[in-house]
Image 1 (spheres, one colour):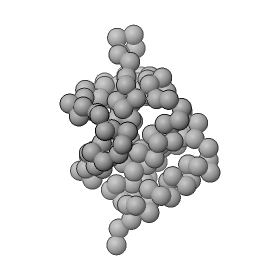
Image 2 (spheres, one colour; image 1 turned 60 degrees about the vertical axis):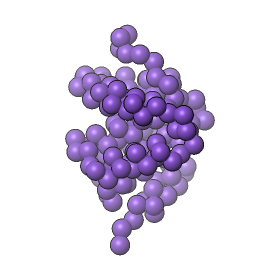
Image 3 (cartoon, helix red, strand yellow; image 1 turned 90 degrees about the horizontal axis):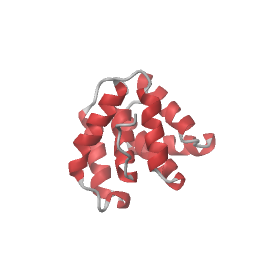
Amino acid sequence: MSDTPSLEPTDALIALMIAVSASDEDIRTAELVTITNIVNNLPVFADYDTAHIPTMSRLVFDLYAQEDGLDALFDLIRTALPRRLWETAYAMACDVAAADGRIEGAEARMLEEIRHELEIDRLHAAAIERGARARYQRL
């Protein structure tokens, strides 16, 4: 972990979204489009250099390959993100997970882990999750 650089807050948000998408070992197009839309449209990313996204992807995949990589990833994210952005991070993670119309299996477990690691209140988490489901509902 000592050779892992510290992250900017926006890099931590990107890493978390990538981690959610990759959690089920199947990164879907809808999830990538959602990440792109979030980065292109949300104010927190106004000055973000999208050239960092491949670096964040490699970081997530490298950490996933390590035995305690998920713990290391959460350590990086908690260190980089101000606490006031933890719910924002969870909302973005929920949007990515819901983008393909379903949240189940590994993605659901990953969201549960994020809730725990970022200390998201259960009531707040339920509201954020319901909002994501509503936004990504299909006919």
